[in-house]
Amino acid sequence: MALLLYLTTIVVGVLSALLYAPVKREATILGLFRPLNSWQNVHGIESRVIPDTVACEDLHYHEPSGMLYTACAGDMEKAAGWFPGSGSLDHPENPGYGTLVVIDPKTLESQKLKLVDFPSTAFVTHGISLYSPPSDLKTVYIFAVNHLPNPFRSPTSSKEPKAASRIELFVHTVGSDTARHIRSISHPLIRTPNDILALSEKEFLVTNDHYYREGLMRLVEDLTHRPWTDLLYVRVDDTNNVTATISLSSIGGNNGLGWGPDHQVLISDATGGTIYFVELKDEHNKTLLVTHAIRADGVVDNPSFFSDPYAGFGGRDYSGYLLPGLGRPIDFPVNYKDPTGQAPLPSLVWYLPASAGKKEGGARGTQPKLLFSDDGSSLRGATTAVIVAIDPATNDGKREGWLFVTGVVAPHMLATKIDFATALQ
Image 1 (cartoon, rainbow, N blue to C red):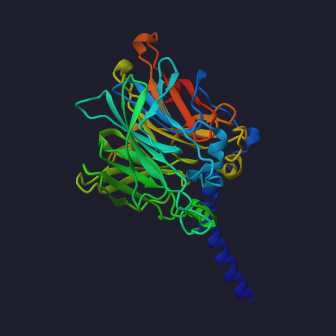
Image 2 (cartoon, rainbow, N blue to C red):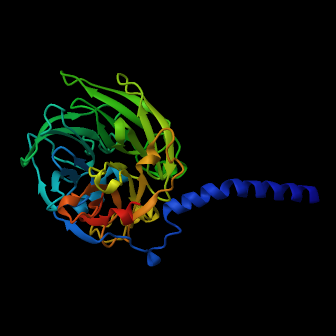
């Protein structure tokens, strides 16, 4: 009996030691160690609300035009009732009709684009991506996820999935107030699309963020980070024939996509709190190779890379990676569905210097630095963050920029001005 007790004690001790670190990390990501009543906000010098940016999940900077592009649901109540990206499938009879929005980072004004030749009765927005041909930088192709309710789903055909998500392709001319719909892109492999990375006007990468669309197993996916999701390479030919292949299936929780420097691909495992740095190994087959990964102490949603355009000014290059996400995802399943958009969803944005993304000789062990934190009162549930630098020649020589943060169920986008020497050092 004494021997059995002794062996049991050893086994329990070993299991506790093995499980302590991963359990503690999971609790950290979920926000269990960040109680809302003691939350500490970290903002910039000043903050401004961007008008007409209701529930905008993704955001991209179009460098040739100097403009920001986003896709917004536009209606908090509809976004709370039907958004397959969050597992909210309660009201397929009342989907939203969102739009594309252009933001001027200098004036902080926004402009909704009129969607021309768009036949859909719903536009439930999620991730987007931009592409401009090198020979025509004023033309912007905009790929956007659209989570349509499945028209073939009915009480007599309950085996059909509730959502029939697809990708919409629009074309926009910089300076105009319209975006013309070119085509809708569907494929059996595009099941739970989250984010897109445009490679040309006819091809893109897209993540499926879950294998299970709803229910208990979807929660199991989020907590175990099993590699059940995938990343697709999709191409549309001149006859509108769509082909899709799996480019990467080794990452759990494939979620946000972004470009790093030198055609580096960024992939996030959102609930795993990890950013993956990836090489595009085969230009023809678009196969991907993960070079390394870095963890943050929170959710990592849509990663982005800030390329410092004034790196030569003052001899300091502030280029780096932004990792935004929910501060307390444990609150998300309940607070997300608040139709008023008032239930708090705290936000975090982390920063990594550019050296952290290098394949060799980089600062792979670098810990992400907290750049922005909000208890949900100024910005609700961050999903994307982008920095736009201010020209020091017009700013008394000061190295500053606007950090734009947006959220999938945020009533508005927030811009906060940051001092680079303080925030990004």
